[in-house]
Amino acid sequence: MARTLKLRIWRGDDKTGGLQDVTVEANHGEVVLDIIHRVQATQMGDLAVRWNCKAGKCGSCSMEINGKPRLACMTQVASYPEDEVITITPLRAFPVIKDLVTDVSFNYKKAMEIPAVVMPEGMKPGEPRMQQVDVERSQEFRKCIECFLCQNTCHVIRDHEENKKSFSGPRFFIRIAELDMHPLDMLRNRKKTAQEEHGLGFCNITKCCTEVCPEHIKITDNAIIPMKERVADEKYDPVRWLGSKIRRREEVL
Amino acid sequence: MATGVFSEGRAKIAQRTLRTDKWWIQPLITVGVLFSFIVYATWRALENAHYYAEPLISPFYSPCLSTTCVSGSSLLGTPFGHILIFGMVLSPAFIILIFPLGFRMTCYYYRKAYFRSFWMSPPACAVAEPHAKYTGETKAPLIVNNGHRYFFYIGLVFNTLLTIDAFLAFKNPEGQWGHMSLGTVVLLLNATFLWGYSASCHSCRHAIGGRLRHFSKHPFRYKAWTIVSKLNTKHQNFAWVSLIWVAFSDFFVRMVSLHPTWNKYFF
Ligand code: SF4
Ligand code: SF4
Ligand code: FES
Ligand code: FES
Image (cartoon, rainbow over all chains, first blue to last red):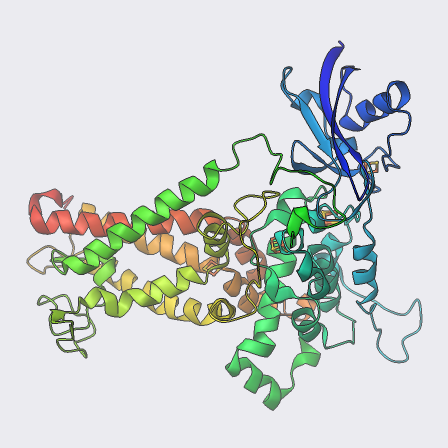
């Protein structure tokens, strides 16, 4: 069952650009990425779009569809009413390169600022043994496909370019939480750096990251808020701070 | 200089948002409900009357700590005298309401609610906020939100007191035990919702087990953590239900104080 779709696609580069109207056929069961490919094949040969798996697993096709940050390959055309014009733009928190392709290198720089897991001294590859209950929380965060939709939606940087230098964003708060909850990680300054270097305090837990995550990771409830509580243990809770000085219990936690 | 979605280098799009759905409904409802609650609670606190109808006491006035409290309503005595502010007697409600207020203001769920709907930061996802600068919870006064756990602990004291109030409601107006009325049900539900709200709190989840690294070494805390985690996913619901029910409980007690027949006794 074919239908005729009216689209507005943003075309341009980092200097100029605007929305262009296109009319295109859509078949039953198609997703927005299919439609973009049809437009590219039939009407706009030089339309730039980034994609890879068409299965919601590579995180490449992030864009904004009717103003909502989404994966184009996971957005059914049928979810929009027949007469609705569908507006497609690149991510609006990052610099645009061309058409629907943005420069997301901000995220790669932030990723490099987080030290990887530090295993106990003398432990050789193959030796670590961990129980399932101990790694479960961290595993939720490993589902991340690095689509950066959460980063793009977070108002801290989307609405305030100047905050980019001091804020790493939700994708990296789940990374830090993953490591801080890791039973064998030996690096013990993750709470401090989360707050002081990665800008955890900028987050006002308005939950837009959780709302847009295609992997349904509970970013705010399971990573950001627990990290804020862990930071509070160290920085904002005099009773616990004193307790930790006296007893040095961190090892057995 | 243009910032946010209008920053140099980002796609040139004139609109603050291209969302086509009714994204403003949610914040509007939140403002409506929270604002109504604030107006009602302020009026009731200022009214300084009709908060006790033996054996029922309004949760806005419990524990009643001032010598101005009506007789019988002060479970914990009256350490506060007549406090005058601009020549007016300070309502005993204000002495205690600051604690539940602080608890809710620093609550992780209400933070989302008011940052979105009152402060519009952001009003909805992918809708540009109107502020030129933003520092979140890194500076005073919002940095206080990091102390939520202290309000949580104080909240437990209040829950206990309001639970005692609900049990005292098993008396009749003459003070004899073994009776039950509509008021008993109202106050019992009030206590239940408040316990639900506290038990599902994120600070509670953290204290119960969230701060651990090795669940396997603490099987009981792990079990407790899984239960609190389940409740925690419903924290938003508890937040609203308990808020509305506190106001309703107060309203009910006020009505009973004016029309004692409202409090139908079952036995
Ligand atoms: S909850 Fe925090 S990190 Fe997530 S989008 Fe909102 S401000 Fe950003
Ligand atoms: S956390 Fe979710 S939204 Fe963010 S990058 Fe990973 S998969 Fe995408
Ligand atoms: S193309 Fe891989 S996630 Fe859409
Ligand atoms: S009461 Fe809402 S998070 Fe603690």
